Image (tube, rainbow, N blue to C red; front, side):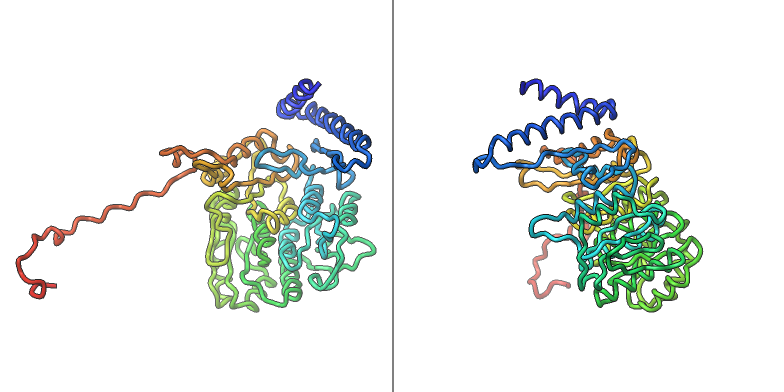
Length: 453
């Protein structure tokens, strides 16, 4: 019997890779069988203290249908050794999965003080609101669709049970723009006619709640979401505000906020064809602090990597060695940046990286992760490890691509003389100092006090 079960489990994971639909059905069947067995065991155990009862496992594999209840998302929906997938069919479902994973409740553990509602069609508002994820506010982001609150999101609000409190100014919900509202909860509206106005409103709200100005300001584009997406992760980690600019102009609300916070350093995310040199100069004229371009690569994938590597004092991820968390989303789903933001502000605290190919990791992404591949010489239990959160169902990133990412993230044994090949570029040897002709002088017979200096 056990041998048949092992064969069936092997077949399930084969089908998941070769035929996702067949694999999904088999995986659900396996969950029901195992869950039934655990349930029967619990019943048989009665009050026997030697046999601890446990809940039956729940599994969800997204195939383009939005789950009807938060628990149907399941965690993990599909996991490997070094990756965990949030398998939402869209950003609305992804936001629910992330919120429930990063703010679990149970026993003496309470839910978050507040939640933030943004609309999935307003990716910029969601990115700006990501600074409210950071402590001490700690408000995970949930998404509506066209201003409508789905049953899935409403159930998540009930599960999270935001209590309000001083950290949120008494609010249980922050409502961003036209996100809609949750009835019966104390709500603070964050209003604005455009992305720039909403971003400044978020900045001013957080200043009021934490009673302190921000440490840095991050400028992102409001025109090209794929270049702005990584800003959400940094805002959730740091609490730094994200303000918006366009390719050739700076909106008045953004400039006025920079002028008011003239002593706060400003960082620009994106190359000059996304946020121009003229815009950089206009920002520099409005502040008395430094203005630095934190990433300036010509494509979104490489730009996200450059931002993950960047560091300047207390600003920047500085992810240039193994032992970190990472979050990967598809550029075709820009609202996943806000949906996943809490994964960067809690738990493994990792930057948002991007892919534009759901079938295989892009070469730049693969190269970056290979460069950070962890290794060990003798004892893997003393090694550091990487972990990757994959955002979205198989339409966002296939199982094959997830398996490739898992292999790249896996800790590897380092054999003597092979470190460069396994772990990426090594450290170049120090160049030898050039010969100094004076060093070749013969010893003198003169006393030391008579030698020329």
